[in-house]
Length: 196
Image 1: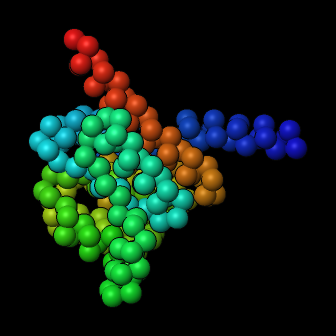
Image 2 (image 1 turned 45 degrees about the vertical axis):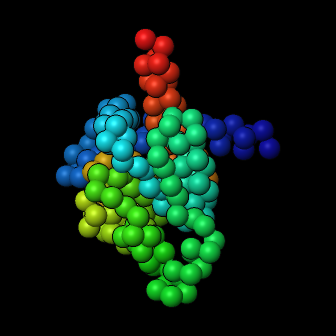
């Protein structure tokens, strides 16, 4: 069993160094540049009163709920996740599950908000429709995907994070880690500015 544990973490270590970041034109940048770009975008939009909107299914939905709460609680940045069970079942029943994120984004997103779209497969119709709705509201989009390198979500963001793994566990762990990295840096910047 210890071999399996060692292999698991060796795999995560390798994947951390294999995360790919690209812009909306498909141009690659290194991971640190991607994090800096994301932090600068969030800071700029937050100063204008804009918010973060998180969408995801299953384990990704849990990441969304966690990060939306932490962004407003610890970094003072407006953030929401559309994961309420009544909302999901209402929109799913009335319009179809593929619209459970697009409908609330169409209603609540404002120009300049940032959509954080998280999908391990990068193929979920409700996530892709959510991105489309965000674009129609002139929102910025940051995507997090995994599995196949040619997944549709990977090319839809202003910035796209891709974890080259085919299993949910490592992809979700690293998506969560990237989000926490962004949050922790923004929180650190906020503390530094308050102490000056």
